[in-house]
Length: 262
Ligand code: MN3
Image 1 (tube, rainbow, N blue to C red):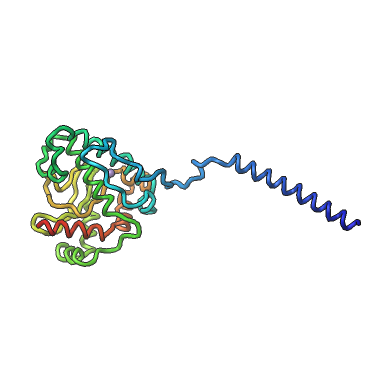
Image 2: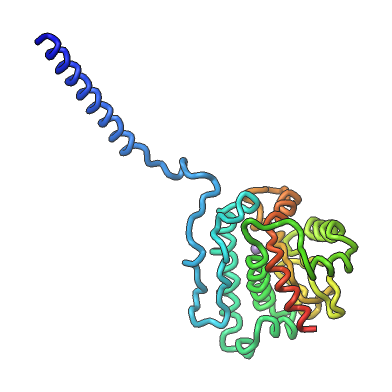
């Protein structure tokens, strides 16, 4: 009988402890939510597929981001990608639609617009550049990418620069030395040869009046908005990280398309 009593007492204590524990758990669940503090610094905020040009019937629509905002981390963090795509890129697209709507430019492709560009038309120059440059930038990056190109592109790089390392040195220099905002490019010139160049602001090598012209096949955005959240003033570190996310398969497609037009 004594044994049974002790057994039941023990059960009662355990039940009391359990209920106490449950209360504590409940309290934790209720008081815990402070998601802002808990979330990792580079947490993605949204889905790129939800972002569309303001003017759904506009001539220029956003290129679909072919991966999630956090797919390029840690090389390019999710928050930077989210802001860059959903705010900056969207703004260029919206402003380009506004600047071309009802004009004869509305009937031209973006490449045709650049070929006959009036450099004084700042709205089309800046927003058209921003629209095209970013569209290419999204396409030539990807997760599980990087390394060096292969096949015909690799051969062309070796022929026109001497080696992949020599190309990379030139491209890094162009991206590093571009003063202020701009872009670094790998292009195919009219002569069919590859070349490295850089442009200021949202200009690009397709625009009439640029010192070096050609068809872009690789682009790197060196505006501070492209790296400042993660790299602050250390642009060289961002450039180094960019090589880890170059989708050489996509770049090779751009290269083949440029070659086919020659
Ligand atoms: Mn940008």
